Image 1 (cartoon, rainbow, N blue to C red):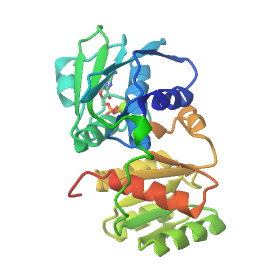
Image 2 (image 1 turned 60 degrees about the vertical axis):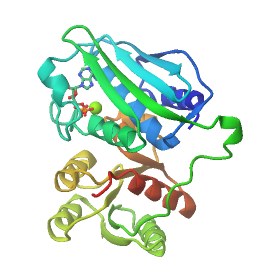
Image 3 (image 1 turned 30 degrees about the horizontal axis):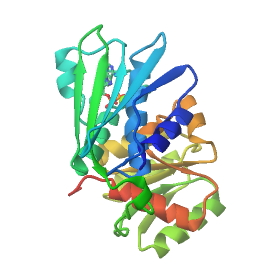
Amino acid sequence: MVVEQLVRSVQRLLPPGILLQVRGESTRSVALSGARLEQVLLNLVLNARDAMPSGGAVRLSIEDRGEQLVLAVTDDGVGMSDEVRDRVFEPFFTTKEPGRGIGLGLSMVHGLVTEVGGTVEVASAPGKGTTFTLCLPAVAPAASTPSEPRLVPSRRAKILLLEDEPFVLRAIQRVLRAAGHEVTSAVDGAGAEEALASAGDFDLLFTDAVVPGTDTSSVIAHFLERHPRAPVLVCSGFVREELVRRGIRAGEFFFLKKPFEPATLRAAVDEALGAAPQGS
Ligand SMILES: Nc1ncnc2c1ncn2[C@@H]1O[C@H](COP(=O)(O)OP(=O)(O)O)[C@@H](O)[C@H]1O
Ligand SMILES: [Mg+2]
């Protein structure tokens, strides 16, 4: 993903009231696909926002060091104690109240970055703000890269599908099954809970952003309690900006905009499955 394009797309996704100041530039690409890099940066920026309850600017600096691109996200928010700082990358570690955070953002950032041979570090002190620094391997210049790095073909996955609109549900089932996946479907929160309790292990949760009879984020949280390393793909007719505003922490999940073509659906599922850490 070309870093310049990425910055523009992250800016577009920011909820109102956050100012992102960008310093430095690079027309180079890094070894993370656009969707993953977007997710990484969005997570860091949303955390920075949460750390600045009375507002402020988030700074993104980009430094081209030849073999590596160094991206740093800095806020001058509340900062962290040493105890918190040492645990931030742990899955489910959060200091936020229920509904505000489930503690998976940074563990996902860490997984995505280290998977491509990059590193992520944090510097912070209470009252002194926070900087997350990512070092990512650079790849060949954009001009000679015809497209995003190809994803490995989809592996067979067991997918929990949650969608209340029967027509859409059937269409998604068809595409996923044709791609070789095993699909368990639910049309509401109760059905999803039942599937989670009885249908064994899943590799992916594919859910509509709005589900009758439940709050989508609680289904996601229950899914992740059982499958902490499995990816979540949220689809919605809203644009992602709107989901972020509605409090769905869209930056933490893969996102697919409705309506979609079968090929886009397959690609989104491949992308999400590819991001699952090895061995899970
Ligand atoms: N920029 C930041 N400033 C202060 N604390 C942060 C920052 N980023 C992350 N944290 C701390 O790390 C914890 C884990 O972050 P994360 O994995 O994104 O989960 P969540 O945002 O759901 O809590 C947060 O709850 C918070 O305590
Ligand atoms: Mg977070």
